[in-house]
Length: 151
Image (cartoon, rainbow, N blue to C red; front, side, top):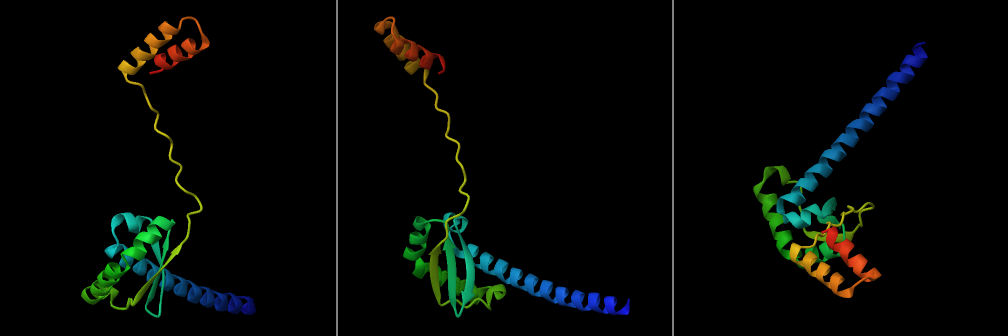
């Protein structure tokens, strides 16, 4: 029984150590993401995320090429803002950024936008009924009347 307890305690220490390293890494990533969101415009920060900071190079993943292009075009101003924030805010002192690298990582699941149901105005419905009446008894007139009724 003592051997099993010793083995379990050793594994517990190893798992605690791994857990602590994982928590530290997650905190660092969260701080890096907050650092990016603090300076990026809302439209850009919602469509991108900070991935890593290695040797002063901040890697940003954009959800599409349009956002990546916008980040690349405003690279100089974003870099200046990051450096100013790093100097001003003590939380971000360790985030020394000298460059921004942008990569495109398309989201695996895009939001499915349900198309907005369009309705006809009453004037358009009246015009369709008048046109259907002028056409007489035909399948097109029936379709126009049905379209006007659904308005």
